[in-house]
Image (cartoon, rainbow, N blue to C red; front, top):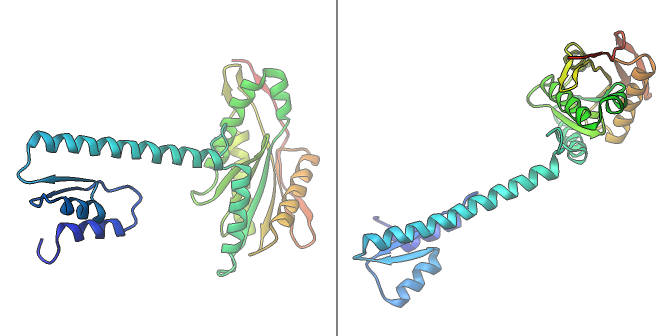
Length: 268
C-alpha cells in the first residue's frame, strides 16, 4: 500500500461513520508487543503475525463473523423497536403520535414552495355493529383490510396513520382541492365497492371522510379540528360520503359526494 500503512488505514476506516461495524483483522510481520498495542489502538479488532497458520486465520475470521452476526441481530432489534414505537401493531400503519409528527413536518415543509397539504379524517361507518355482531377478531380482520385499502388509495409519498379505534388520519403532500377530493373519493370507493371477506362471511363496510386543504404552516390542531368537523358533517348527512371543510371559518362545506349508506352482510 504505497503512501499508507496498515495502521493508518485502520484509523481512516474508524474515522468514517458507518451504519454497520467494519471488523478489522490486522495481518502484519511485526510481532513486538508495542506493535500489537499500536495496531489495536489504531482500530484493529484482532491481530495476526506472519507467517501465520491458515487454521488460526480461519478461526479468527469465524470469531469476527460471530461478532458481526451479533451486530446484525442488535441492529434488527433496534429497527423492530423503532417500528413498534412509530407504527400501529394491528394495521401496520403509522401510529397516532407519529402521524401527528408527520403532519407538523409536512406543514412546515410546505412553507418554502407555498404548497398546500391535504388532511383527511377517515372513519369506518357503524364499525361497532361489526364488533357486536361478529366479535372483535372479525372486527380486527375488517379493520386490517380496510386500512390496507385506504393505504393503497393514496400516493406512495403520502402518509396514512391509525388515529384511534376505527379512525384514520391521512396526509397528502402538495395537494389542491381537486386532488384532495379525488383521493378521498378513491379511498371511499376502495372500501365500499368490494365486500371484505372474513371467516364469518363477506361484510360490506363504508367510510365517511372529512377533509381540509391546509395552507403552508397552518396550525395543525386547527386544521385537524376543521377536518374532524367535516367528518362529523359527513356522518350527520348520511355517511359513506366525502365532505371537505373550509379552513377560513372552520365551517364544513356542502357534501361533495353522496352515496346511499350501506352495511350489509352476506353469509358465505
